[in-house]
Each structure stands twice: as C-alpha cells, then as structure tokens.
Amino acid sequence: MAMTGVLRPGHAQVRVLDLEESVHFYRDVLGLVETGRDATGRVYFKCWDERDHSSYVIRQADSAGLDFFGWRVLDKATLDRLDADLQAYGIKTERIPAGEMLETGERVRFTLPSGHVMELYAEKTKVGNGIPLVNPAPWSKARDHGIAPIRLDHALLYGPNVAEVQKIFTEVLGFYLVERVLTPDGNGNAAIWLSCGQKVHDVAFAEYPEPGKLHHCSFLMESWDQVLRAGDIMSMNTVPVDIGPTRHGVTRGCTIYAWDPSGNRFETFFGGHLPYPDYETMTWTFDNFGQGLDYPQRKLHETFLTVVS
Image (cartoon, rainbow, N blue to C red; front, top):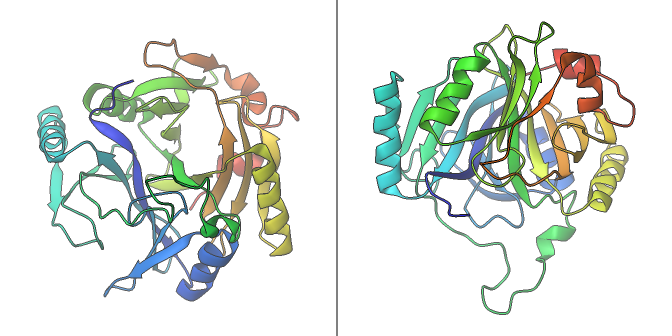
C-alpha cells in the first residue's frame, strides 16, 4: 500500500510530576533509550527499534497529561499542503520553528475540537536503531534493557466533539475509521479507532466531557510473550497495573495497561488485525463494550472510563 500524506505517529510530549523519577521509570523500567535533554528541561526518548531521534518526550509540570501528539508526514510539500488544507477547513494553525524540539524540523500545530493539540512535521534526525542497514541483526543490545517496546504505536485520547474530530482526521488528514463503539442510544459514536496506514489504529478518541485528556500512550511489543514479560517487569518494579494481561475485542490486540509514577497511563500492546482503507468499519454496541475492552472477562472496567490525565 502506497504511503502518502500522514505516515505514522511521530512523538508525544507528556507532563510528569517528578522528572528524575520519571526518567528512571521510562529509561530503566520501560526500557526506552534516552537520546537528549534540552535547555527547557525536556528529556527525549525513543524505542529501541525506532530510527528517528525521539518519539516520547517528558517535561516536569504541576499536573500530568499530554502536551501534544505529533505526526510524521511524507515530506515538506506534504506538510505545506496539509497546513493549507487544515486552514481551508477552518482550523487555525501555527508554525513552530525547526529546532524548538531537539533534532526536529518545522512543525504545524493545531488544536482539535476535543481540546487536544496535534502537530505535523516532515523532518527529524535519524539516529538509527543500533543495527546496520547492511546484513542487519534481528535486534540490538538495547532490546535487552527493561520492557523494551519496539515503537510508540498509538494514543487513546478523551475529550468532547468526537464526531467533529473524526471528520478532521478522515476528510482532511486522510485517515479512515477502522472500528467504533456506539453511544448507549445507538445514534452516535462513543469511541472511534482511526488508521492512516494498515495498522489497526494509529489514534483513538473517546467522548468525554473534559477536553484534552490523555487516556494512554501505547508501546508496541514484538509478541504476546513479550507482553507477559512486560507484566513480570512491572510487578518486579511495583508498577501499578490497571488492566491485563488480556485481549481486546476491539482491535483484537493483546494488552496490559499500567501507570507511570505521575499517573499517566501507558499500554504494552501486541497484535491487532490488519485493515485496508476499503474495509468496512466494524461496529460495537455500547452494551457489548465490555467484551470489546476485555474479551475474556467481558468486563467494562470502571477505571478505563473514568481515570485520565
């Protein structure tokens, strides 16, 4: 499938309450690779198999949550086109100069009706994954450190106006709707899962009264065994677990949800079906959302609906 427009999730910037405690958690427990610190105090990380400089950035603040979520686009011409398309749709955009984030080019920033700040960018320094491009090994030594996910996979975001958010992603940014959960009355979508490629989702949104809330950032694991190993490491380090290990009905992914030391939920995720843009959207009724969330237990966990940062 040809990849144009928005290519993939690029980065998330997340607020934490204690910077050094969070650095220890993300570097030594989750097993991300620290790639830099800037003059503002932000700390940059990447997953071991990612080739760009960074995908996960943390900064100290008085409250946890998400500052913004960034998307890698094909090239500078695509960045300019999508900026114009967003403005034509009626969305105000802002240009963030190259270098404001370490090793990152110019970004186009805008705010969704859900209150979430999004960014598009075309350039980020490639630092590699520790494996040569000629005759590569299957993994680098960084894979043996902590949980060690292979990439930042997606985010689930909570906020209002999900119907309008869906229009922006599908009509302007080129995403398509893979799955949805209906509202209790069946007349709207309570949650949506959107993809810009052949992944089961690159971002999801759920209707919620407060704007701009982070439900979780998700990190991709290589196998179900690696998800289970992640659970062992969480327990060894007394990481508070929310849900799992289990399997979703929605997406068919295998999962553990847990919290970082600041109360930001994260997910270790594996699997999911592989849709194409011409596939019909799969629909879950709200009365069966428990099975969609936790397929074995058929349980709609209260924390999943109410705990956000």
